[in-house]
View 1: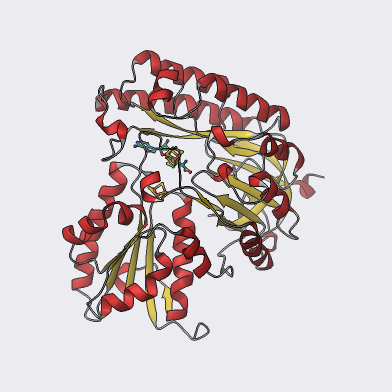
View 2 (view 1 turned 90 degrees about the vertical axis):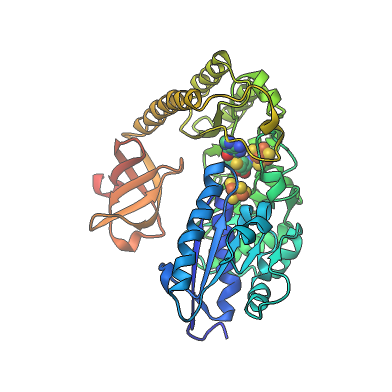
Length: 443
Ligand code: SAH
Ligand code: SF4
Ligand code: F3S
């Protein structure tokens, strides 16, 4: 059946984090045997899946406005359209979604999407359960094949899901469930299958990926995957400072395939705020941790996440965040205004910060990060870096690849170099990317 031409069309829209990107690919895998092929046009789709994110209020609101538009498309389609809502909003407010938008046919949480074929069949018979929101990731992964259809040379691979940390601002422990790690063998099988299809780089995913609790921990897993023929680059995200153990730090100094880039969110630089966030680290312990990581891998690019305007954050607390940023020197970072999420402890805390104050702090923080990012990029000029070419560029004859530090690099190079790792002499740096020439041409 999977070899026959698709008779039905599937449109998936993905919001949120990289794990949702992975999940969307896996949903397409689950639906392919039913005859669903992908389309980029929602108006042409027989089945639309919105894979949603609940992390901030804006992310959640987008889903409802998108559903409003889909409802109109559905009315215009005589052949019918099935609308499914997946992901973290589905988990958090599945029943509300079906109440607020009757055009939705089914709702499926992040741990239950392997049941999509069954849910679709039930929705078409217009009876039975239309809401699946289990918390059993092992069932999901058992049901998914380790065979995938990667779309490029770099792929995501989920190794850990869920979170037990309960940062007081965050919905993830409620939408993804508790921490759970896939067995090493299953991950290795999936990685081998990817490598056999030409994948050169995997990014191991987890909400707390460095809390990976399979045999050997994350360091052991990285060392094991590094032995796979053809898999030359390994990355992982996102990590919690508290789970950054010695073995993983050592791996950064020893495993060639482990790329010198680490996303290690700190959120804030004031110990009072960190405590109220339940982060279980201080500014000082984070800085010492960065020192130890840099001792193992001096050139490592550090990235992070920041929240401004957490309840009770005063000017002096915010200044402490800026000070921490100055001390670390980030290669890049994501920063957000605190968003009050229903059901989380911080939502009920006193001292909620005015929107205008959050805006102003976010601007100042982002200006500082921009400066650091530009400096980090500029420091690569004149160096020769191995670049993994991932796709063709906007200009003819141009390829775009990634440096070891996750910077985009634009190079004039022949298409046959796609999927190869090639030395590139960097000659200029912009805010978000680098440009260079093939080293062999400069020789
Ligand atoms: N450990 C997770 C973090 C997920 S959320 C991971 O694996 O990615 C990503 C980032 O969103 C967090 O690091 C935090 O900076 C931000 N965030 C989470 N909840 C938020 C909220 N209520 N308001 C604003 N930003 C938030
Ligand atoms: Fe959310 Fe904190 Fe867990 Fe990250 S560690 S997912 S920020 S609760
Ligand atoms: Fe969003 Fe869920 Fe990821 S809330 S950030 S899609 S884990």
